[in-house]
Length: 287
Ligand SMILES: NC(=O)c1ccc[n+]([C@@H]2O[C@H](COP(=O)([O-])OP(=O)(O)OC[C@H]3O[C@@H](n4cnc5c(N)ncnc54)[C@H](OP(=O)(O)O)[C@@H]3O)[C@@H](O)[C@H]2O)c1
Image (cartoon, rainbow, N blue to C red):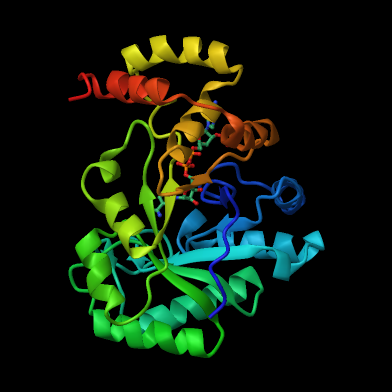
């Protein structure tokens, strides 16, 4: 098995299509090129994005982009069964049966117009997930070359350990940001460091632009002034200071914001400023 390769930031595609910006093919091609030229070569998908339309929209654009498939990495996820148009489900649920995983991978390959997925993730844990069945299925997909690497998303340490008995779990994509930082204290990130599982952080800006956080909103302008950066870059720098080498999965579709996210790795965020940000967002003194 080749080593897992992910760029230092991952481009999340959740809002590129019907669930957000509704980018046209030409615009998707331009965005793929922009990310690629900035060194962000890993693209994060899920079968469900855009109500099952974004992978295909992206795949069509990628085929037209002229970019080299060998120089990019495609991540996708399977398992969530949504209720909605074109779906016969009565209730949202998860399906990790052999048949469903295989069908989902085959569909993603077709939509993305590719022979292989660089990383397949199970989107969310399910109480009915049979680790033996999943392990056998994923190992087969790896043997046939349809999947290069396997991981999970939103899994706890014990759920990950159980599955790891049957198939190597190389990454876990979790929700993590300054405003949603439980993974740092509930053992999730410790466990990934211990087991050498690569952490990816979805919604790395958290709720910063969506909620009030009065203390944090007072502090941030001072820090932005000090480091000569904008808030989004500082939020990403805060994640990157964690020793687990967390890879932020950024959701922006705007080139100027992509550039700011890239600046984050060069921000020399001090230890005290890092804790100050944590203290104000928590609303409690660091114990
Ligand atoms: N595994 C999972 O369960 C899971 C769950 C959710 C998401 N994900 C993945 O994670 C990726 C990123 O998630 P996310 O979109 O929540 O990440 P995010 O990077 O935290 O947020 C991006 C969103 O914030 C907006 N934004 C960025 N900078 C801003 C600013 N300065 N002011 C106001 N708004 C700003 C962006 O809008 P613009 O586009 O206009 O810049 C975009 O809508 C998704 O695309 C998906 O691939 C995975």
